[in-house]
Amino acid sequence: MPHFSFQASDNVTCELEVPHLLADGTRLLADIYRPSTGGPHPVLLLRMPYDKRTAENLVYQHPIWYARHGYMVVVQDVRGRWKSEGAFYPFADEMADGAQAVEWAADLPGSNGKVGMYGYSYPGATQLLAARARPPSLKAIAPATTGSQYYDGWTYQGGAFSLAFAQSWATQLVSDQALRRGDEATVRRIADAVARGNQYTHLPLHEVPFLQGAPEGQFFSDWLDHPSNDAYWQRWSLESSYADLQVPALHVGAWYDVFLRGTLKNFSGMHAAGAPHQQLLVGPWTHMPWLRHVGCVDFGEEAVNPIERRQLAFFGQHLRGESPPEDAATVEVFVMGENRWRRFDAWPPPEALPTVYFLHSRGGANTRDGDGWLSPESPGQEPPDVLVYSPISPVLSAGGTSCCFPSVAPMGPADQAEVETNPGVLVYTTEPFAGSCCVIGPVTVRLWAASTAADTDFTAKLCRVDARGHSVNLANGIIRARYRNSLVEASLIEPGRPYEYHIDLGSTAVKFLPGERLRVQVSSSDFPHWDRNLNTGGVFGREAISAAIVATQLILHDPTHPSHLGITVMPN
Image (cartoon, rainbow, N blue to C red):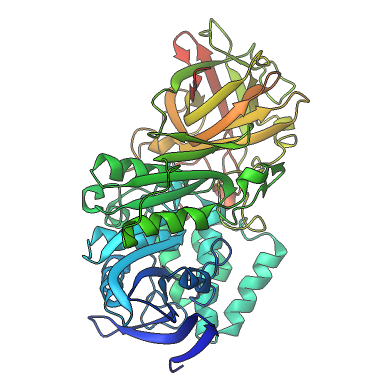
């Protein structure tokens, strides 16, 4: 399609399908939205794989809105997606292509030479990877709900495959590419599988039928072939290159987002590496959209998406030299429970106090009607709890930190009643709080456990129980036993031997009111949030369900094996 222009309104001109020729001869296409008067103007660049014409309008105002506020907005299809030429492979070309796109945008007619980038999810990655190349015209970025690396916290978590997100995202990418080349048979095959609702049950993962045969789907097989954090993943890791990311950044995250850990790491890592003007904003949302009603919870009027106001102030400061707003804060997080924003000077808040709650029971913590409890007192000589995990009948997910739509992945706050009546779930709960208790910061579970299997999983979930006994999830995590010591080197376990497992549940910010309780669920599956461990210790992604082994798990809590929850609590 040749590029053409039209008048979007009295003060905005749109130029569509504008070509950008890369150094290797690949042509990328972009839409450009210019203010009709004044100038030159700073540029906002959005690079995305989801069709530039949509401009991520599930979260952001349309580029015309930003153009009315005096910015020239450039929205570009990344290499190999939609109208841009080349072959798309996730993450591979975003550093080099992004750096070239920044300088190209800086030289466009009407530009003042200063470029900012914005966008959430994969477009967050296109910003951070471009910034890693340090293009001179890039003056500020606003990466939202995106990762710090593309192994742990993106495709895998604690060594387990993030099945619902990773497979549904791969399915979307492959379907889009099939549509791009006119392969309607593949598009229909994928749509039929998703409509049947059983797209996550097929094993081996390497033989998922609707991802087979599509030439653009090789990356999914590559992900499965690299279940450890090896060189395949490390070449794109931002965590090892924060010293190169010397650009002001507004990091936006969400408490129920799959990439929450990465957002927090990017803010802390870039700040520690000396990058100027780092800001963090975390709301109570899922990956998208950012609304006051999330899952089963209404978080109130303050939860309405504030990003347009914040981005205008941020880019005004760094692209126009405007003074920062008087209410600007380094860290601003939404505290669930009290449903309001709080401001801090750092993350985690330095005033938050590390607090431990130990797991206890009389050996029968199964289900919410069991005898499990949490308390600050260390455990005595208590019998272990026992749960049976069958990969054929895993614990089903209820909410969580996933992506990207509730129709394809478990996400957000959800009623935990059905999960907590499953005997394969151990439940530990505090006494009702006499006063309020504000938990803000990272959440971890240190679990001592033994298994009859050579490899297995352990999951943990933090919940808030209201005065009526209604339990809703706050944070969740998993550890694959073979990766308990290292995400790089796998090591199977000895059946029957106790091991200590560290389960990272991410972070949260929630105020428990008087009469409410804090709860931890422990299990060995959370499906399809994560894939099912077949308990064999076999080659990942290559085994059929017929290989599955039932595992009996012992969860220990005694003086030698003090399993516990770790949180940080704000002083009253």
